[in-house]
Amino acid sequence: MNIQEAVNNLNNTDLIKLIGILVTIIIAFFGFIGRAIFTKWKHSLDLEIKLLDSKNSQNERLLSSFSSTSNISQTKRIEAIEEFWAHVLDIKKCIPSAGHLAYSILSQNELDDFFNLQGDLPKLFLQQVPNKESEEIFWELCGKCERLRPFLGEALWLNFQMLQGFVGRTRFIFKESVNKKSLTFWQDDDFFARIFLALFTEDENKLINSNRYSSYQYALEVLEQRLLTEVNDILSGKRLTYDSVTMAKKLIHLKSDYKA
Image 1 (cartoon, helix red, strand yellow):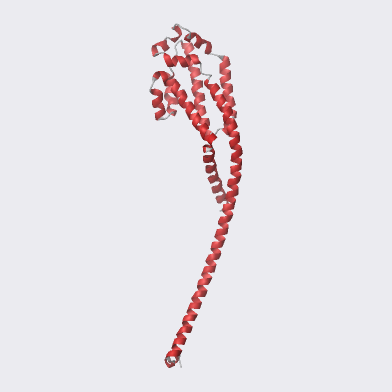
Image 2 (tube, helix red, strand yellow; image 1 turned 90 degrees about the vertical axis):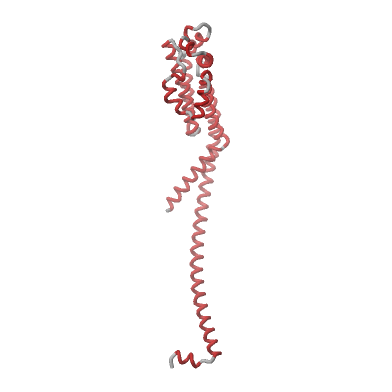
């Protein structure tokens, strides 16, 4: 008797029982398969979680170490900034005051005939320019700032370089003016006109060019404001935060590449 005949000989009760047994077997089979798949998936997930926890712990230690180093660096930066700013103020004093004043009050014709003008201003100018002692002081101050460079940051240093160039070029123009017996207006100088002013933004140049007699002072104030902005970012921790986040991202990226 084959299976078909056996099934045909079963009464309804036996058939229901048989179907129940088959359903139970099927459910049990798929339940076993499901549990096996779930167990494998859970094991894989547990491993991934442990790996992420491990990486997270490594990153936290890395960031903590970097943060401690940054705090020490920030303290040194603040000390360096205090000394740096004192040097900046002294460098500004290296601009001969008579020349600065002449730019503020004299017309172009008066500048052309500056050394023939009556009064004390041309005499004072000749006392201040050239001045070997002042020249030595200027370069000594620049050297002191150079030694502080590691604590200043590149943005602050770049703006300081602009100030240094501004003062240095001014001193050069004044010395050349003595030789030519005619005081060159700073914006008529080729270096200032073609190179230096190109470093300013459009708004900064608009301010500088808004008033001829105030142009030199405006340029000096723009440079000082640039320095103050960078100094404020460092002292407030804004620059440190930006540098820390940037460096932390780089370190984590390098760490991930190494693990890979």
